[in-house]
Length: 203
Image 1 (cartoon, rainbow, N blue to C red):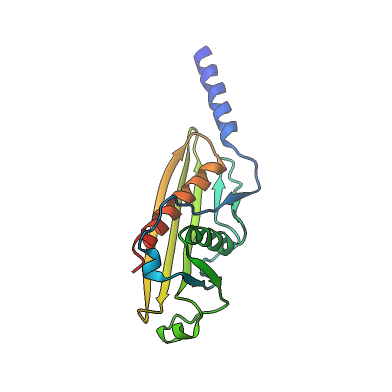
Image 2: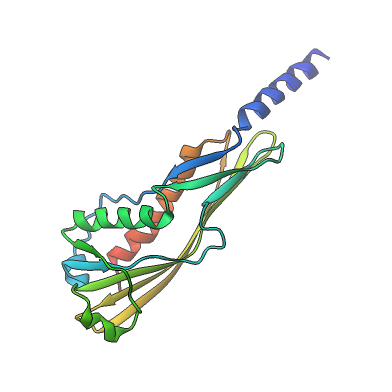
C-alpha cells in the first residue's frame, strides 16, 4: 500500500511538471551557421535580391501547438513575427557573413527573362509549404514532431536560369518535460540542415 501511494505521488508530480501553462509561446526562429561557404560568391554573386516569402500554410499565425493531458492546447508563434521576417533576417545575416549583400525587393515573377531587370546578381525566393511542430504529453514523456517543407527558387543572372529545390525535413524527439527552448533547438537544427546544404551547393 505504501509503495502504491509513493508511485501515485511520483506520477502526479511528473504529470503536473509536464503540464505547461496554457497560452501562446514565442519561439525564436533563427538560422545560424559558423560555416564559410567558400564558392558561394562565385555561384550567386555579391548582391542577392530577396523577394517576399510565399507562405502557403493553412495557418500563418502559428508554427505549432502542444497538447497536455488535460487536452487544452497551447500554441507557438515565431519570434520575430511573422515567420517571413524570422527566416529572411536569418538568411541576410548568414549571407552578410559570407560577404554577400542582400537587397529586399517587393516582387519577382520567377521567370528567367525578368532577371535582367533586377539590380542584383541573383534573386532568392521561397514557398513555405509547412513549418510546424506538434507536441503531445503522455504520463512520463512529451513527444514532438517538427517538420519543415520549403521550395527554394534561385534565379542566377549570369546563368540566365532559375533553379528550384523542393526540400522536406522532419525530426521526432522525446523529452521528459515540456520545454519551449527544445522546440527552438529543433527548428534551428532543421534550418541549418536545409540552408547549410543549399548554400554549399545552390545549383
